Length: 101
Image 1 (cartoon, rainbow, N blue to C red):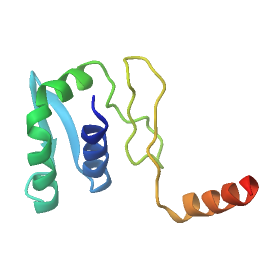
Image 2 (cartoon, rainbow, N blue to C red; image 1 turned 180 degrees about the vertical axis):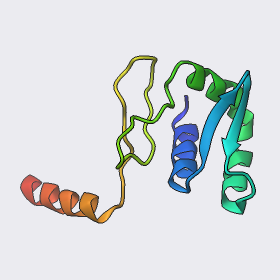
Image 3 (cartoon, helix red, strand yellow; image 1 turned 120 degrees about the vertical axis):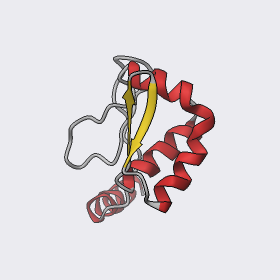
Image 4 (cartoon, rainbow, N blue to C red; image 1 turned 90 degrees about the vertical axis):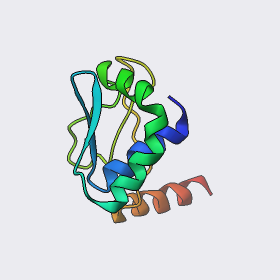
C-alpha cells in the first residue's frame, strides 16, 4: 500500500473514522461528518487495495488505547505506528533530541 494511502487512513482514524468490510465492500463510519467524507473521497481510487489489506488484517488496530491508527506492510508483519503529536509524544521527542546532541 502506498504511503499516501496509509497516511490518509491514519488521518481518517484520528478523526474517529473507521474502515471495515461488509462482505466484499469497504465501508466506513461514521457517515455524515464532512471531514470524514472528504477523506473517503481521497481513498475511493484505492478501495480494492484497502479491501485486500482489510481482508489480510493489515489495517486492523492493535488494541492499544493510545493507538491513533497502526498498519503493517505485510500480513503478519510488525505493527507500525505513525508519529503522534500528543503531549506525551512531544515530551519523549524532546528527551530523544537532547540525547542525540
